[in-house]
Image (cartoon, rainbow, N blue to C red):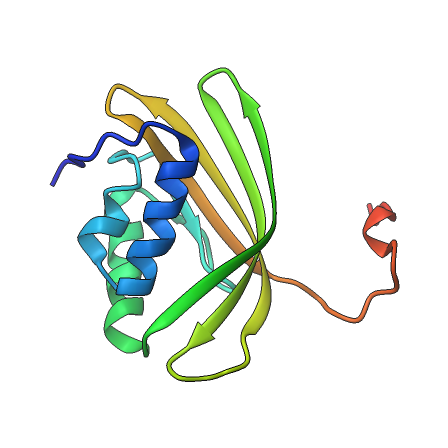
Length: 142
């Protein structure tokens, strides 16, 4: 099914992605991705998924096998170039009726301008190690 919504900005596409996630709405969530074999999605602790069909199947399994979830984004940063935008953020995940979030998870979302507006071409979420001293993020590890 081809995406029908024309997202005017990467921010619109990002908000639609996270809103669809919290509603467990597979069609709405997948409408934020480019329908392309070049898309990629990496869930925390999992192998990369390449292609629209594989990404869709993974989200379908997540929605089928998990309780309601909501993601709160913090510390968002954006990098804009011609036709492509990268969003970095910390995701705090609320599961079911839990009062305390799970996380943090570091997310990278890459958006590409297409004839149908802005679309996700990559969503990567990776657990963040906690307990670092202030300023530790400034240290080059490799």
